[in-house]
Amino acid sequence: MTNTAARRVCFALQVKPERIDEYRERHAAVWPEMLRALKTTGWNNYSLFLRQDGLLIGYFETADLASAQAGMAATAVNARWQAEMGEFFVALDGSPDTGFLQLTEVFHLEDQLDALTTTATERSTS
Image (cartoon, rainbow, N blue to C red; front, side):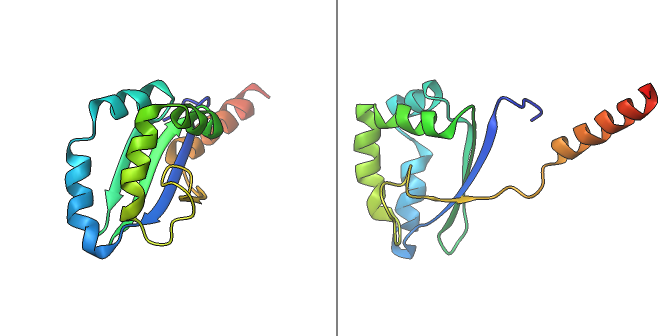
């Protein structure tokens, strides 16, 4: 993604091993109202990846993380969803949508390619 207005957010949570199958089932058909709320509050290109041991990695793009989280916090559907999902996680500090461990991005292909292109363009114009 080369849109610099969007921020890439990656996070980790740990699903309780005994709840992994149910967690998968719940996410196979997320409530339509929840899906629409996520989209309208700025959670774009949102994906969840679940390892067999319960390690959950989430990724989404948003213009502003705090605004996206605040937008969801203001919806009734999110309160219901978070109340149900919170019980699936190990050592969760807060609700799943705010208590996750945010990961630091260390590499993004398009950013580095864009930097190469910009550097090459600057060299050719000097």
